[in-house]
Image (cartoon, rainbow, N blue to C red; front, side, top):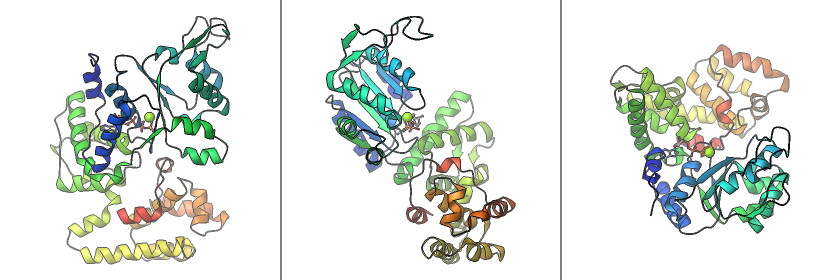
Length: 380
Ligand SMILES: Nc1ncnc2c1ncn2[C@@H]1O[C@H](COP(=O)(O)OP(=O)(O)OP(=O)(O)O)[C@@H](O)[C@H]1O
Ligand SMILES: [Mg+2]
């Protein structure tokens, strides 16, 4: 029988969406839940890897036992080892009492190893030994060995096979973890889920902040649907929470949205104003500039720059060009110089130009992005 809190947990971490991709994921969760096979969840940041891991646990026969998450990123090895396997009192400075370790605490339940691709090679070896034998060795207590029964679910936003060929991740461990892979596509590949998520979070944040439930104007909804959401559902949640706190009218209008979201779909808004053909030929001009820079290797200074200065293309177009480049360089403006065929010492001039014309975009959000300029152009 399901534990008493599983319904509450499902409510707290719902898995919404009716797209084909989401339906496939729901079916994958059901089949994964029927066995103890190890599951590897892959997907960009914020797509819902942890929610899916929880759902597997809650739908499995292990749901009466704990679900324990261990984040493998950014924790020093020694600490991670004792988090995993526990430690005996006095085994290192600061170890004031015995700690059973998270694996023991998850006994008969599920352990979710998040960002497993960030583990050091030493920890990977220890994990592999555990997976092979089920035995754990407590830090500082050689005699304290026990056999633990846990289901292991892992997640990563890296390509572990690439990490394996770069010798950063053990290939044998990769194949052990990846018995059942569930790839969770980014939100921009399942746009039909966006309105459902928007509704859900408008309601949730109105409740939690005791604010009225906002509606969305048609144009605002369109803008939020075509925006590519590089931070996926986590970003969407944050955007909606801000709207709930800030917007005082009952309906969210395009001007309430951030410039980032509103600017991204500027061509769509022009179409709405009835200038569909102008917008398409304009878009073709911008795409032509990108093609000259990215494919024919012409310099930014002889293509995008003069077109912008002569007002042939707009600020939004220039931002689109910069955004397309930053997606390829994962947010690096220095690499953008090379990509846009400029000299290395043009850095200051280029940044100065972008800042002067308000076309300088924050780089952080491109760090986790893995789409190609081609697919983005198709979305735009
Ligand atoms: N299908 C969904 N329906 C509703 N909410 C979702 C869905 N998927 C994810 N979320 C919510 O989005 C947020 C991010 O999800 P989660 O933490 O599972 O992502 P993640 O893939 O583990 O991200 P990261 O790689 O950054 O750790 C959470 O608040 C989660 O509840
Ligand atoms: Mg996560």
